[in-house]
Amino acid sequence: MKKSFLILVVLLISGMMSAQNGGNDMKKFESQLPQEGRGNVRVAYQGKAIDQMIYEFMEEQGIPGMTLAIVQAPYIPRIVGYGVTDIEKGNLAAAKTLWPIGPISQGFTAVAIMQLYEKGKLDLNDPIGKYLKEIPEPWKSISILQLMQHSSGIADYREQKAFDVSANYQPEQLVQMVATLPLAFDAGTDVKQSATNFLLLTSIIEKVAKMPYHDFVKKHQIDYLGLKQTYFGEDIPNVKQEDVTTTANVHQTFKKDKDYINPSETTTGYVEKEGKLVVAPTISPTSLKGFADIWASAENVSHWDIGLAGSVLIEKPENRDIIYKPTKLANGKTVPAMAGWQFYNHKGLMDIKGNVSGHSAFLSRFTDASELVCVTLLANKEGVDLTNLGRKIAAAFDSSKMGTGANDDLLYTYESLFSVDETMSKIEKVLKTMGIPVFAKFDHGKNAEEVGLKLRPNQVIVFGSPKVGTALMQENPSISIELPLKISVWEDKNGSVWASFPQMNLMAAEYDMESNPVIGKMQELLEKIVIKAASQY
Figure 1 (spheres, rainbow, N blue to C red):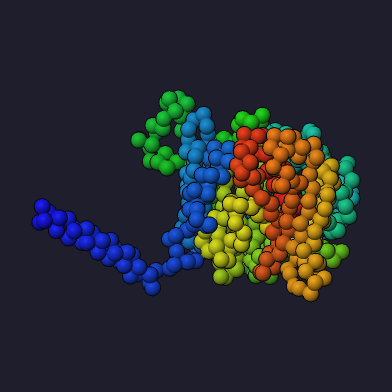
Figure 2 (figure 1 turned 45 degrees about the vertical axis):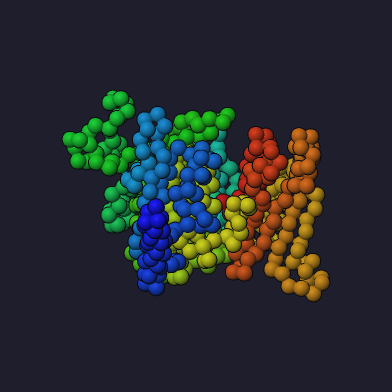
């Protein structure tokens, strides 16, 4: 018995020493291996790995499929597919999946214009009437640069009742939809995104380059960079895709044809209607020319993005600056946007994003030399804002530089393009448009100044619907402490401006009201208000 007991003690001590040595072994390379930032293998943000963040986001938003690509120039160290690209067929989202990249397509158009500019083929200040003789007279004095800036005031044909994203058009047919409409503002005095601007740019490219827009971009960007999974919509029929509906939803061709191993497949887009996902209208190759007409894999978007980092696509840095810096209008106003890109107070941060039938797309670039992280997210559900998810993913690579500085589980936090004052003013305008009453506004920065203290700009607005709030209090009177609703707008130590509010699902859980559908609608409303106020487009 004694002998058995001694053996057990020895084994336990040996095990403990082995575990301790194992722990020491884990730390013995600590001085050599990256512990944070570039090359760190522990890519997580606020305790959540990237996969977990994406899984939770897709579940919350009802997204069938998504592909993520990460750039740490000149590398693309991570390309991951999640979910399915077609609910009915069960095709998987993968590295080579082809997604319509929506308004990111504007970047290809802008690069094409700058390439012609560098060759001396056109001047950005040329009036577009010099190249386009058949456009309405009021448009002719608008400059090429103003089309790129979205400062033309020309109406967006996508907003017209006659527009059908699935229909095939000639450019003049789309122009005709808005030809008789007055300019929204005098050219060069404001910025409003319009697909018509970029449609006109493609026509100018064709006139100057003496070849179709499609061919010019393919030659000087797609083929030049070797992008094997980047296509114009008109070329999609050439992509080899197996019709799995003929084989009981199971891929078979890859067993006998190497081209079907890890195939490039197009996605099916979805929209939410009455709480269910339904197939969105197909996108015609000609309905969004120059604005949202390109399909690509997330990897190829990232590859093209790396090409933007230096002189590969646009040779001179001063020319790159024209399209990768805020717009300076002729009237002296500065707008934090250009050619579909938006620019933040965070040094070197820019993004381009948006929706196209059944899909959402996002590309952010942290271009400061201390960061150099770019995030591409492509999803097959329309109307999803991927900005916050993209920010958290970037922060997983260096939270001290790219994080929000707030607890993102507790607060919904969205970076604004504008100052605290301007963001708050825009929130008030959005609330007024929605008919939502404002009850109070607090300027904490001003209050601090009045008592001799310093505080970076920080404001809170209080608002809500008494009818909605009363219904919630009828269910649980104690929730009154959380009402009315509040949005805080604040500036951090680096000059970035954030708009934030409490996550409504956490509030619901605190009061045992998770099943109340009003709470979810409140979250959607608050997100809509913040995103609209904090964004240019």
